[in-house]
Length: 268
Image (cartoon, helix red, strand yellow):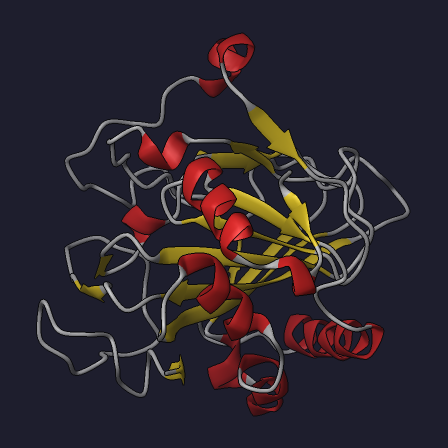
């Protein structure tokens, strides 16, 4: 079983997450929370922050991304601190503490041909540790046609970190790591999970779980997701050159816990 209700996020669910690196949480957020996030997404797209990027590659449509949105739109405190998001991370990481690394909107407008390339998350960020995860919240119906994410189950335990793959500039990241393997050529040998989702459903995956998604081939449906990146109690600050841009300098030393204004503690 890899799909759970919020009330089912017990030790068995945590063991599934530990083994597979991915779980799906059905009805994780209320219709009111989803509608609020849709309104904030529209506000952010109309007036993006300095952290926003257009990840659209050659092709049609628009692939919009903005990070550290809670720093740009303070009303998101309602979700960052007021929802059950951090509780889900605590339960599945089995951590008594979680920090928010950052939040993000990932939006593929109708007819966006740009795929989300196969990658894993953690090598983009200045963190070290095992308790790193991403909560991906669906704000629209998510299907294969609209760009449902696929996850390679167990890939977080391959014992290999892969070079970050830029969605915008292929030469942006230069860390001396091997590229992600050719997942498409390996499909027949891998256990790949894909969840069709309704608004309010969410997935939570490990920072080293390899995943990717097609473009949005629908012409009548946007694929909006609000994403939160969490760190548990074993995670420390690990700055390295050529990483994903952070909103600001966190002001903490190498090897320190993340606890600071940039990476706030949400549960302890």
